[in-house]
Amino acid sequence: AGAAAAPPPRQCKLDPKSELRVEVPPDAPLRVRLVAGTAEIFGTELPPEGWVPIPPRSKIAIFTWHGATLELDGVTESEYPSEETPMVVYVNTHAILDARRARARAAAAQGGDLEASQGPRVIVVGPTDSGKSTLCKMLLSWAAKLGWKPTYVDLDIGQGSITIPGCISATPIEKPIDIVDGIPLEMPLVYFYGHPTPSINPDVYKVLMKGLAKTLERQFSGNAESRAAGMVINTMGWVEGLGYELLLNAIETFKANVVLVLGQEKLWKMLKDAVQSKPNIDVVKLQKSEGVVLRNSKHRQKTRSFRIKEYFYGIANDLAPHSNIVNFSDISVYRIGGGHQAPRSALPIGAEPVADPTRLVAVNISTDMIHTVLAISYAKEPDEIISSNVAGFIHVTDVDIQRKKLTYIAPCPGDLPSRLLIASSLTWYEA
Ligand code: ATP
Image (cartoon, rainbow, N blue to C red; front, side, top):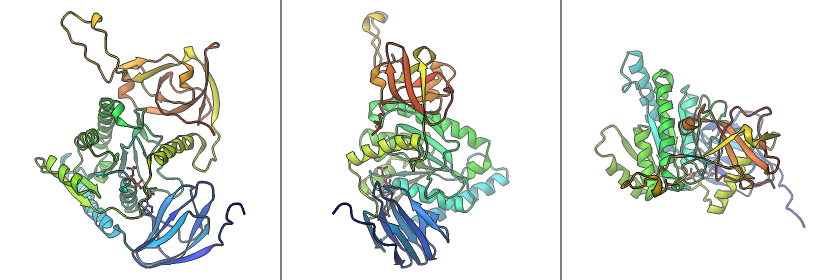
């Protein structure tokens, strides 16, 4: 009987304050059209006319404040309406943040100090699949719709939404996030960690957070508009042990003043107690949506792989990456944090070996690099690599030891913008 035929286009009427939850399969297209009323997908309004293609693998909710009629055309893995959503609570949170932005802008206009003119720095925390990335998108899109240009900071190296996994990054959001294209990628500020989990080298993760925060701080001090709009910071779903410690570190490093805790009472209580002594931080507990789709570790691994593919091939598989060859002698590859400590024999008598977790280690190019991602550093000198952001990524497709040549694909043609590359444990296998 083969695959089920696509169902005919169908209409769905939504009551006010309800949403239609839809899961799109990996290989079949779906499009959605607003027939009547108004509706939004994670904070971005559906256009009043025309079909909107929904990217494969998306799991979305089409929410309406005042009621809507939708038309769906294509295959879904599931589609069902729900009236139980935390949207009212989320939009109220947005209203409070909006008032703080207005206050910061007013203070700036009156020549207020950096403190008074700083808008909300919101950090969203919670266990995996609590809807953190989704809440971030909504808060950003609602703010952008009102004309603010908040900065999105993504610290989630496992399931980040700005660029490929293994990175922490930031980008200004100047208009509601596009339903099809996602977060705008014109000028993201990206720091490369190179692994999908922070436990491999938490010290490097912390140093990179510091670097990103410092750069943003500098940008904010010269830009009252971004400063007043503030930040929305997405975090990892690892909230215990080291994960918890890194969350506290992130709150401090980015000087977050609003902590939104999704769906976990215990985490909320712990964070509230932890920041008690700091009068300027509000720790707020928010209900999570039942619509958030649970993803197991295999699914997460798959999504990571797709994110890497998307970087080179485009979301709709519409880009063609460029293949290129470089001589080993034209590039230098480094790894941040070798973990290798100096041998005792190399130390002065009596000194204990200390591993420097942020040490830079030169890496020999080998066939082990095939299928891995390398980042292109903006650093001028190797010792600047850890404090520099990256220009982009290449994917190694072949290493010829005999001829000393490395073949890679890159999203753009032409020579590499820098000869300094950073190795990673991120892999992607072309199917
Ligand atoms: P992680 O910790 O893994 O990064 P998260 O807490 O950030 O997860 P999200 O990425 O926001 O969780 O949500 C998980 C998935 O559920 C996403 O694919 C998202 O689009 C989907 N989702 C979120 N809210 C809804 C909803 N109300 N209806 C349907 N799908 C939803």
